[in-house]
Image (cartoon, rainbow, N blue to C red):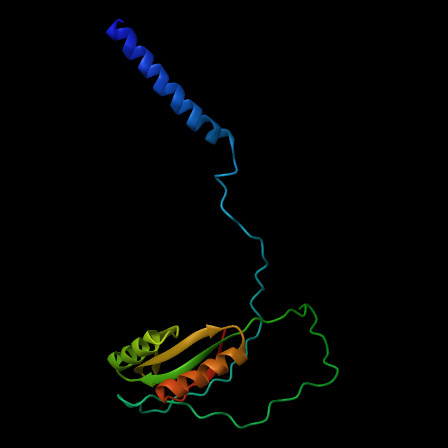
Length: 170
């Protein structure tokens, strides 16, 4: 057989095989779509009320700060609240975190965060300023269910002998 003819036949066979493999992919949409899900994201509430205790002026470098727990009674809503014109009543979505410590040095906060992560808790460090001083808060969460956050706080207290507080996050 002529070598040129042989090369042409092999080339035609390879191109035909590639066409059989790839042409159906061009016309079939089933493999190209990502798995998408439709869901509604609630709007951000117009007014978010947070009652978070403030840490004291002086922060220790080795001891975690635990804000005092509020002992005040919750405010009772009136039995017939008046509707707010212009705003629809929508369910508010609140997440909860456990603050287990507040430090003046990032190294101390990182050490506690690493110990919590090693035990399987989703811990992170959040920095902020308090009266011009940078503080580092160690938090665990977030959790959508407040009771689950409280149970997690109790578990942390048993394992690490650290008292934490459950706080809402927007």
